[in-house]
Length: 236
Image 1 (cartoon, rainbow, N blue to C red):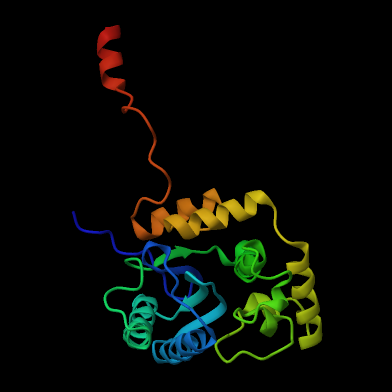
Image 2 (image 1 turned 135 degrees about the horizontal axis):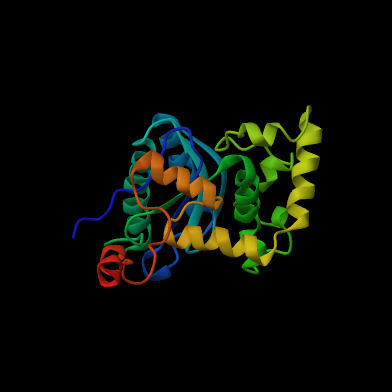
């Protein structure tokens, strides 16, 4: 059975998950991470994808990005992978696949969820026990958003800019947002979206997506269809 195409909408933010095959390590040291980020930056510019947040974990990468067209995300990830995987294999004397099948994408309802997704991404190293605080982990976009170190990979989303009128105000507001952390419900919703490719948003957002894309977004109703005609015939 043919795989259903990814649900990608131009000018809409998406979560992206690229995981190692069988959860194997895909970034072993800083040089690996620097190489991947360099190619990712080049490919994002080439295919007109704005990356708003990112983190490189040992076995996977998570991005928050907005493509200018339907093809950009796939072209960016494929091109970056075609550079990185052969380089990684040659460096470590291995062969074969590195990534676990296709990368996953999840549409994000921007206004209520984009900054929450950015926070989730940049807190991932803390949640995994790799760092005590997000600033302690070099391989994410948090230092950029906190005003510590500019990041050429990142294109700030307008919702980040709306946090304040000056860079200092935006950085302070975002830092406070991350320090607040997130609750279990929010974390579960975003984590499930990353794992399944389901959109991140309200029920109304998903209903609107179904109308717009003509694809099933909401879970199918369980049970057999209600047979109204049979009930009516039996009553006659």
